[in-house]
Length: 518
Image 1: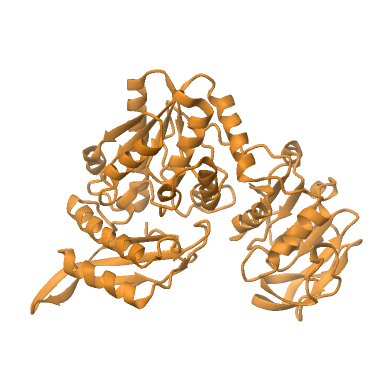
Image 2: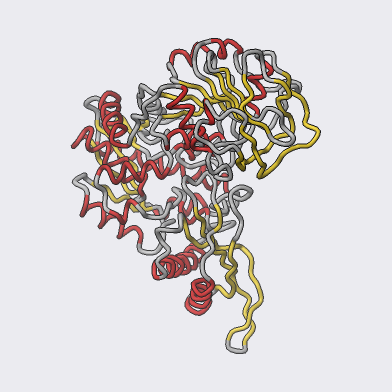
């Protein structure tokens, strides 16, 4: 049962209504960077539900549709008359214009990518900006004439209304995308909207979040016993630290050693946790049962579901042994929820701790970070005083190496991948790149290639090196690792790991790829 998944209370809430945009999560992030809490909701959220949440402002996201398309997504028109400040972005601006009597039409020339913007009125959401700017556009339709009462704030060569405002009703729109880095001054648009036009103060910090989350956990669990699924990563360790601050000895942590960990990781997690945390830790060594369940399975979604189900089965067994345990703490993050599929976002991959959970569970979930991004959890970890090696540990998926071995998971393949991955991490650390790179790891491909070693033909596995730079894992760019580091990794892997004769480097960004291969 999923409980504890409501967002932390905030007197300054900004709701992002998602119309299917690929950038909705970036909008929420940019708002949070202004120390204002934001949450993404589907575009069809009823007005009554929005009013119950009492948002200080609402942002209408972009989207792939035309406002004149059949069954085009729309919000309740009364939203624009409810007295709540609204900012429409791209499709959101076009929808606002259509609902309020403006004119939207297909552009004679579509705009995609970097575009020159001319500021006509340097007030309102464009206060303090230069008259000539470069922004990021991605649209086919455009507002030709703004609704009655609106002032045109900016234009481009092909878009007569690139920004507009009705300050009396506090309604604003921009055709460009201020949330992406390609609009380098976009954060100023959000700041002008939030602070200049909405009168917000920006009181949401990780310090305030910790205090609110502690009270929320106490209210949820009462006097009940609680277990926490610990992986050793920053998410689960920080969740354990926060919940322990809230309920003390009611918490027991369980480290599920499922045989899918990196080299020496099980021992390291146990040692680090027992050195730095005053919380009882149960080390459940259950490698055989996980590998037996995964035998013969090649589909990545099925792997994730199996791992998720087995995790819960182990937790429930341990809970029965402890007696009277009612709650399970997970380090679920907002990107896990979004990628696992929402009302307006497609399922990219089922995260084991979200869509991989069984339908019927005996334990109720406590997920204090369900509405946070990874970098926000790291700031919470620092606020709670966690050691640096935990705070900055590279993300590692719950299914572990099961989704870094393409195809069937076998003990032989696990051994190969562990050896190779250890070399990758060691050389990244040796080069001083570990903190710069968001995630670096090896993937074992189920293909063999011909090679030559010692004048002999080889026919062995290929290893894929993956390293990316990111802020929140929702988007990522491949890391330009220096050639000499790549050469050392390649040389060591092919010389030291028996069974691998080829290394390839994945230079695909996200999107179109994901960070993990499965």
